[in-house]
Length: 139
Image (cartoon, rainbow, N blue to C red; front, side, top):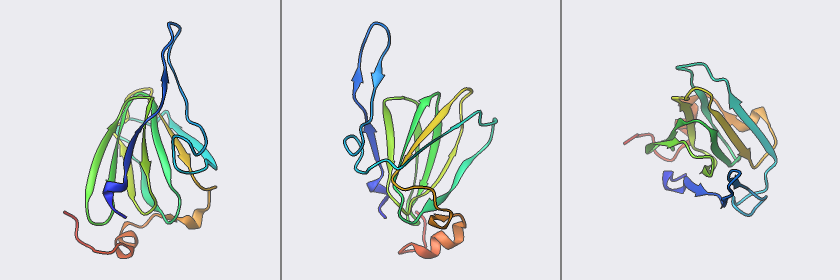
């Protein structure tokens, strides 16, 4: 999977004097039906989340509150993307290793997944992930 296929999305914003609203509609702002939603919060300082890839699941990661860094790796290239706007999301195709860290105090990370949870769909061993990628060298 090309790291270039990771896409930063901008969701619609409706401005109002009472506050802003952004929305995500199934298969409209993201290219898949949402089958699972989960969120990370109260992450202790210096903690890391993620540390896996998915065989088939696509995900969109959103910093609905605060900020954090998403470290990406496709087995060939690496990238780090800082998320800190609730109207932006990071669309991750399958077979991208991800680690999330540098959580600000009070941050909430929302994840929209294309598939229901299946523990067999996760690749949690980095060396196994590298074996499954086309090349084994990281730039």
